[in-house]
Length: 228
Ligand SMILES: *Cc1c(COP(=O)(O)O)cnc(C)c1O
Image (cartoon, rainbow, N blue to C red):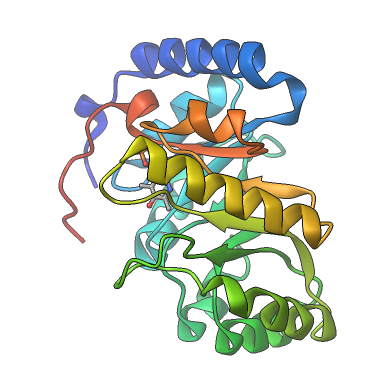
């Protein structure tokens, strides 16, 4: 990727700091930001990290691998952000991502749990839930969470919480219901982390108990189309 010209580091830093201030005001220290850098170049990661961000999120395995190499080459040792994988995750991608990813947020099936147990014993994971019942969307059904959690715990993984994506149509009532039901399940299972809320719905997610918001376009601007 040779997209340096498209990265306005100052604008990214300003938007990140404004967001961080607003998040602190609404959610206090409980809520942390995962800056979603998918489709943006390594320079965008560097810009948001320089502004104080310590967590980034990526969706696509190959894109992350390529980008991470570029980022690591220029990044000062010891200042790398925590990398959260938030995209559709197949078990055959786990191996190539194992040395890069710190938190696996999109675990939604047993084959991935099995592969993570082999490749990354003790890995930190969130279980992704499809709380809206939409088809073609990542996440297990709510009634599958407990089974998946038992499998992960038996496999020695560290289940930190749940992750969900609000309804595609963004309807406020449906969004609130989805967030509320995921927060309730996390509480029932004694899971501390709840990853929910994106650029368009993070305020509602924070009001419903989110601890990790995943924000892309509100920090980096409109996403360029995927070219990979
Ligand atoms: C792209 C993406 C985000 C960030 O979306 P924005 O609307 O740009 O904030 C968050 N979570 C997931 C799972 C995503 O795929």
